[in-house]
Amino acid sequence: MQRWQVFAIVDGLVQLRQVEIGRRSIDMAEVVSGVQDGERVIVFPSDLVLDGLAVEEL
Image 1: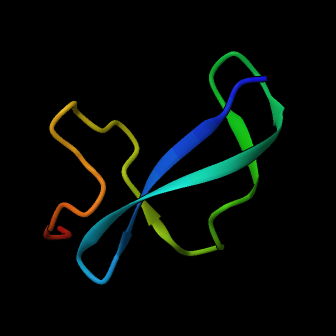
Image 2 (image 1 turned 120 degrees about the vertical axis):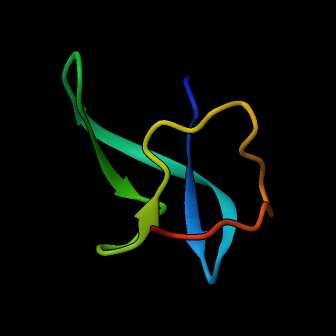
């Protein structure tokens, strides 16, 4: 089973989160748990993004 993760931004810090995926297509996936509506996530993180990293939102 594949485990999916996202980088959420909470109070200016990156937080690595496990998420559960529902339906998906070739270019989109439904996140059914692990983040709440309205939470900010990093969509295309580089390999420099790590759990606990301080970030500035633009």
